[in-house]
Image (cartoon, rainbow, N blue to C red):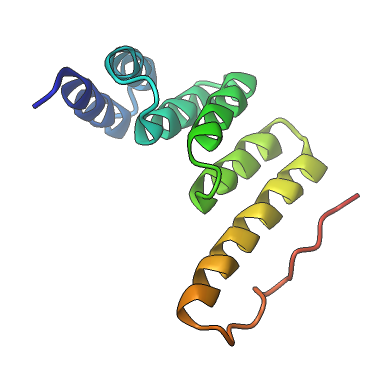
Length: 124
């Protein structure tokens, strides 16, 4: 098992035990070994948010989005972190982006797929 994976799995264990500071430290070590690992970036952002570090969580999830801009889950996470900051319009925009990505994936399998419930409305 690689060092990055070992640290990541250790971080998940700590996170599951609500030991978010320890989890965050493990995720940092995993990222030191493998910087662009999006699963770890998402886990790090989630731990940061659990610790009340919402601005840091937003910055970290943006790192994951930069690596994989077509991952709807990252936009869903971004929406949650923005909501926790009270940035509702920005959160709605991120949620709409997640719905759009999911719909595009569904269209690949089912060209007649209807738009998602709620559409793509974004608060302006």
